[in-house]
Length: 266
Image (cartoon, rainbow, N blue to C red):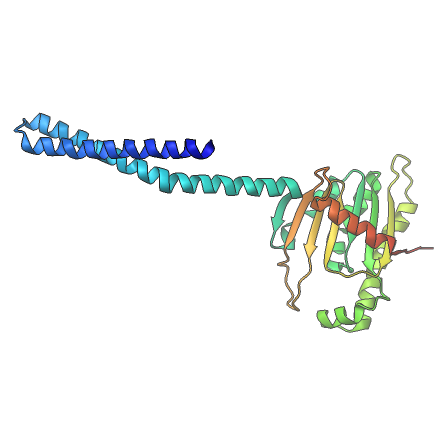
């Protein structure tokens, strides 16, 4: 039925185009063979030109412009469907474009962090995390790569530092988080019930995860040794659907956490 309607439509279209072009040519022909006044000759020529242009434009519009427009609309709809299905809200080519302070500030319930040690990230966002801990009831969970991981040797070579240097950097960040844990213990405000837990886990550091309530940032690791902030990163939201990116990354975080060991502080 659809095929018949489409074929019927194109048959009528082509018939209309042919009639317009032929009519235009006939008008031009009559204007030439009949001895018309200047006014009527110009009028007939203009009508003929309009008919021919209309016919030609109909072909261009149908087979060029309309196809391009339909293709554009379909590609946009496909992209929107992918975004709705996966939950992607933003894509970045540089980690410096991500406003972590905003995400931390507007978190109300949970902040989950998974990275190797991220000294720069931790130092840049430490004050915002401290303020969040003192003024809210947020639960913070941090997972660092275990300093006893067998992967440290290869990572140290990749970072072009020694195995001991990498281990020291991880322990340095442990001390940084310990500072927040102890500060939280001294918290005297009864209205806030924030909690901070640090874990070590032996996992493949393919990327970092930062989850803030119903939003999650995924930062890819670089395969080369080049020092750069140009790392593909995406922000995804919880679509409340199974198997969206938020759900996938959240499950991976929990899997790594299950294999981890909580760090206890005196």
